[in-house]
Each structure stands twice: as structure tokens, then as C-alpha cells.
Image 1 (cartoon, rainbow, N blue to C red):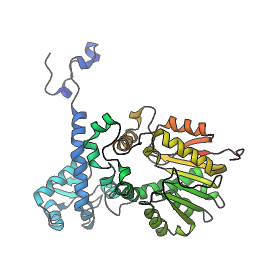
Image 2 (cartoon, helix red, strand yellow; image 1 turned 180 degrees about the horizontal axis):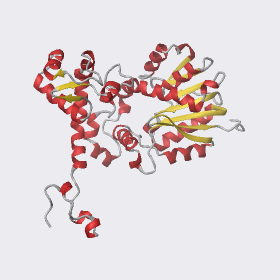
Image 3 (cartoon, rainbow, N blue to C red; image 1 turned 45 degrees about the horizontal axis):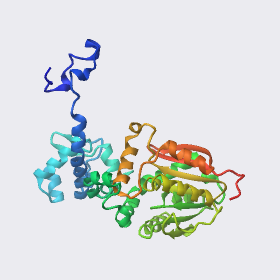
Image 4 (cartoon, rainbow, N blue to C red; image 1 turned 90 degrees about the vertical axis):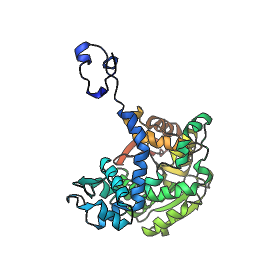
Amino acid sequence: MADSPYPELKKSHVPERVGRPWSDHKPPPSAPVWAVISGLGSFHVLVAALELGVFDALTKRGANPGIPPQVTAAELASALEVSAPHLESLLDSLAVLNLLERVGGCYGLNDTAARYLTRDGAASMAALVPVAPGPLENWSDLANTIRSGRPAEPIERNPANFYRPLAEATFTTMLRAASRADLQVRYSAMAAPRVLDLGAGGAPWSIAMLKACRGATAVVNDLDEVIDVARRTTAEHCVADRCEFRQGDFHTIQIEPASYDIVVLGHVCRTEGPDGTQRLIARAWEALRPEGRLLLADYFVAPEPQWNPHSVQMAMTMMASTINGFGIGTGQVANWLREAGFQAIRLIEPIGNQYAYVSTKPATCTT
């Protein structure tokens, strides 16, 4: 039997009717393949819109969610000083991607664009979008990375180019997660905790803890090229005077044993792979006082990867661009924490799709 030209419309040979697998008669639709093919273009459509300032320009014209779209492509093109026909094509693509509203040839922001894609959005991802995939040339060379087991241009060669903008771009979301985590971790109830924040980036966890607990102090660590981000953010949040900035590799910097009440590993383990993660957990154990707690936040791969596609894609990003990076599974992390000696292990979700393991060093430990 010849394939139908429109396989998704063919309903005559289904298991309920003929008792055989439907694929014997009806080929699957090609939509999943086309979704992947168009993904590259969709990413660059969004990057171009952010670079041109499309979303902020619509905000200035009052084209906000809840208001019927009333800005034409020609009006927006004049304000942005770009080609009107080309901009209209871009705007239509954004509308198809559900990142803008389009009605009768006019455009406006929807809730998604207003919240995530404007520079002053409540949870802006505008700075994150261009840097989130890592170096784009590594994706083009992915097959060779898989053949050789190493990317041609690992980000470790120039960490400032990737980690610095990433730390800045993810700060807002991570700060929200760290602040909300207090509802489940209750570090605000501690008298004067000493915090060790390894690979802190913009130090959102340290900032959240220091703001919640006026007696808290923090040792904030990151690479030489990145730690200035933490210096700036802690100053902006008026907690820099309670921070010690300790720059360098978190595998080798000096850490005082049994001296900290909280150790944070915030979204660093997937860059380290299984071996590096276990070494960091061991360092955290040594640094903690008895009854101290480790907070290990990351995008954990679920037991069945399709349950959490985002974590799988984040893991692939690390594999494509780092020397050791791989996804780490929820079960793996729990096992590593138990093997290290941690107890009271639990997984929390402070905000949607942001997870952290919280575990405690037993009181009976003397190290």
C-alpha cells in the first residue's frame, strides 16, 4: 500500500479497526523532524529580536499584554531604523513561536514576552538567550566531539567568554530560587551561619542567605575571570561587607575543615561530570561542621530522561562545550550523597523546574 501524502490525516487503518500496528499502514508524521530542523532558525529569530530591541520597543509603545495589538511593522521599523519588510517577517515568526501577539497586521507583547524577553521583565531571560547554548561552533562540530570524546573548543580555554555572561544572565532566576528555598531550608532561622559558596557565579545563594539572616557571613568563590560578577551583585544587594571573595578553582582553593554551616554547589556539578561532582561533594563534607548542610542545585536528569527534557538538553550543552561536563541523574546524586555520609537527603523545588538536593552532615561526625 502506497504511503498517504498526508499521513496524519489517514484514519482508516488503526488498531481499533484492523487489530494491527497502525504503522503498518500509516507512516508517522514528519512533524518531530521538522521541529528539530526549524529549531536553529527559531533560536536565531529570537536572538535577532533581542539584539534589535523589538520587545523593549513594543513596551515603550504601550503594546502590553491585555491590550489589543496596535503597533504595525512599519511603525516599529521606523523606530528601530530597520527594513520594514524584513522586520515584518521577523515579527510574524515571533508570533508563530507564541512570543508575540499578532492581530490584523498589528503586533503587541504577550505575557511570555513581557515577563521573560523585555530587559526589565519580572523574570527577564533577555541576556540569557544568546549565551545559553554555549559557543555555537561547538554545536556544528558535535559529531566530531562525540567521535573524539572532547569538544574542539572547550569553554575551559576561555571561561570568561562563557561563564561570566552566563552568571550575569542567570542571576535573576537563581536569586528567586535561592530566596524561595528558605521556605523549605529555613536558613533565615539560623543565628549566624557561615556559608561557603563554591563556583558562585553572581552569588545568588549567598545573597539570599545573607539578606535573610543578618548574622550570616559567606566565603564566595569563583574563577578569577568571573568573581567580579559576585563582587558587583553582592555590593548591589548591600551584603558585600559580609563576604570574603576567594578566587580560584574550587577543586584546589584552600578551604578550612569543619568550619561552615552551609556549603552551596549551585549549578556547577553538570560541568564536572560524575568524578568531579563526587570530589566536590567530598570537599563539601570536609568543609561542613557537624549538622551542617549541603545545598546542591542543578538540572538533574530524571530516571527516564523524557520525563524532564530540559535537563537532558542542558546536559547536552555541557557535553558539547566542556571537557568533563555531563548530565547528572537524581538517583546518582542521592547515592553519592549517601556514600559521602550525608543524611536527611531531600530534593526540593523552590520555583518551577529549579531543583536542589539538601543533605545534612550527621552530628556525630568529628571531621
